[in-house]
Length: 132
Length: 134
Image 1: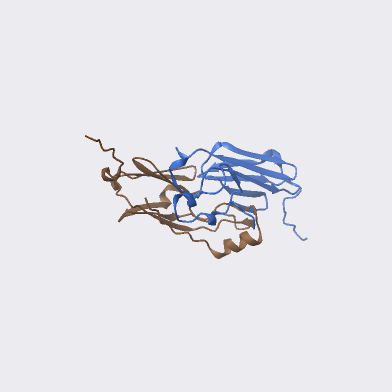
Image 2: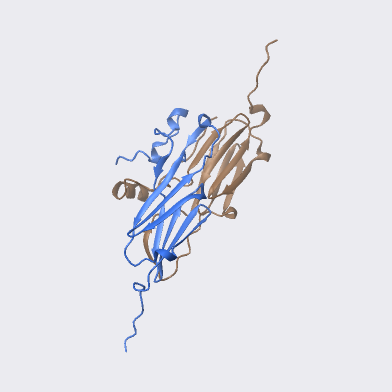
């Protein structure tokens, strides 16, 4: 599957085996939940350890991209006994359809979870049509 | 220091990774942890996004530190249509066994930005000592 970032590579054993093979700042796609309501799309992303200032959310026609940088959490790399988190950067893109009101989009970071609200434009909001 | 821990991954996430996504989301173990050892203390960092302070429980017994708790589900409106659903965690539980003595009364924990930091000070008997040659 060619995924070097796989957590399953980390096994118990001598110290050197527990380290991830690759260098610092690997890029990881954050876990996502996305749902759609009549009014908007809501995107929730896990960004543990990322401060508000280190999150970049960009919306452009057809695409939403999110980047987050985890701060330095350890004082000394050589003292690591187990490293499942390591140093990393979060990045993920989503394709967006038409009908999203870019101007009123909002983002909020709470408890390490980023919530992005993408309101729909009036034209695409689903309506209940009354049959006369 | 010997660290033992449970690595368990639900089969469905494994299958999903194989089938769906090569550039896969990070949280398979929950919580993922880092452990660093210093002269006077051991520091454990756990990723706990979306977990509230009151939903985390840390216990220390017989030299085993156990981190457990619950990640509550998001409130999703009734009429919502779920498009991506990768978060499946509800309760979690991981343990770390210490091979040296620790000062259990001074263990401290702090949860910030979805990242939990637990500092486990070593007991005096476990700290490194320099022996003077007379």
